[in-house]
Length: 305
Image 1: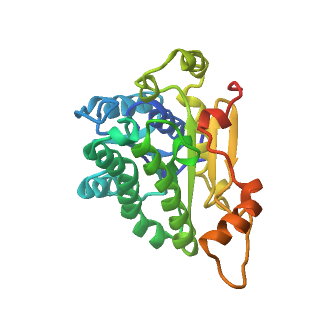
Image 2: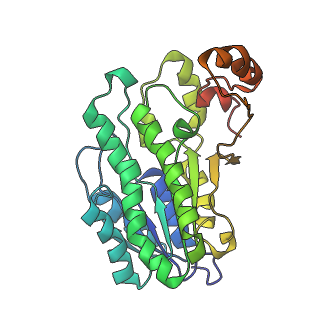
């Protein structure tokens, strides 16, 4: 390991780090000098089962490359499990400097056919899990006066996609959670940011494709998880100490900076509004600023760079 690497001396937790994006981030953080806790429950792409091997294999890869890592196999959606992720890192490495909330899975369905179980399970892992792990780390960050959260969101939550109401709601909620953490924790020197990745992983590979999307999918296969890792690692470094409350996207060699929701136009009526005045005055004035409903693939419609 390079003694002058960007993350030397830091302890970083990466959830969902047994495969894909999480594994790539864990390996790069270790390469940059961090001590890494690799968390993964080892579920299937739709959240079923458990398997300790993925997390253990990533730990073995990091150690074989000269890095320092340990595994944790708890569920982020379980309060005790989430707490154990942080306590294991602190107990084994002596401190915690950053949390990368990446764990998740997909259970896609058209909204009106989605089961309550599929809704709850996806929300529990993506959103509640993000909250539980972050909450467990927060007292340590507050006490030491520093810390970084990197939460993984998605273009499904930021823009929208068909058939992913549970996933989109969870990922949009993560943005709100990250903003709240950034505001609540800024006085303690703690920062919180989001990253929306586009990469070919086993989760993406599990989504059924029609003939229109198959050609796009072939192009996406060049977008490896390793392309996502550098920004996530950087956001944990001291060099990023002034970056908080932001939403980034990564697709191949492109990095996006997303805007947060803001007011586009205002209208005032001194006598108050009625349904009829909304129809006659309000909507005609606002209509030119109303944004069309478009999916993520329609907005990000150029080939990966």
